[in-house]
Length: 363
Image (tube, rainbow, N blue to C red; front, side, top):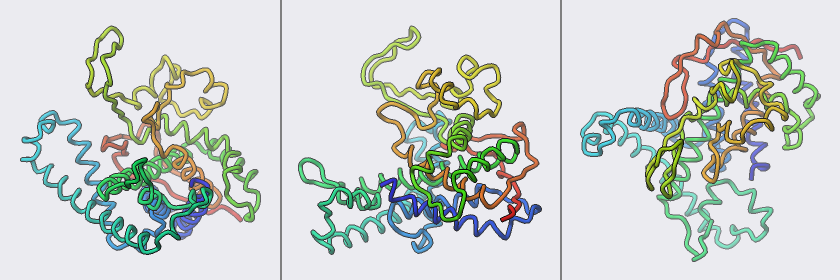
């Protein structure tokens, strides 16, 4: 499936650059995150549902309410009074949360119902026997046609919840990571030049198509992305529920307890990352440096059996968008790392715009 998604990702990345072109005069200041959000939304809709986001009515209302929903969840996580359901349901925050959830449910329900009807109308012709062809179905079609061992499929509610995961996680997180990367490339022009040199070596002419093999050759670019994910993990907190009683550092934790852990803090531990963990340094992700670290010292996509299923999808999206932006524009900013103030809204947001300006590169 991931290989089949590459043309959609590349097409949306090129469309993004076309929209940025009129703004790339070296003077117009832009919030690069807002432009990237539109791009990753269109990409996610295309890969998840096989549809152009621009052709789906009310999609902007949907994504706006997903953001409201996530913000409400983030606020509830840090307010102990909201842990108590009756108190939370009396609050203004719950009314906002509930309305956003209702709008999102109605939107996804319409899409799922319409697509389920279309698939049923196609009958057996749609049920591909060839596994290679089946791998090229979009994610929604795969979820709808998937069968359990007893022959039953997912209910509309279950499909809706999968769509929340795929659309919500695939849109905001990828846009944030690319926005932070663009900002840091602008702050560190020498790193930006190294990324550009590598890109020009791999994609040496317009005829070179994006595929898995040449994306793998962007090794330094990937090091930069990984360092940004270390400093700014899109989802800075994770949680696990204990399946049995365990002991951590001499403390006994009973079964069925929820443990919350901070990837943001883990990625800044001096005993792991050295005396300057706040410093941006892509060299931390050279193969020999990775080999020397504990495998769970770096968890931008969490880890273990419950790690992020969109890990490779996200890396492909980020590399392709950066590739197309870097080919067309030089990124500049007057911001410094010390200017960045962060806020928690389930995802790790910048409190303010990702402020850059673009300069067209000579052809």
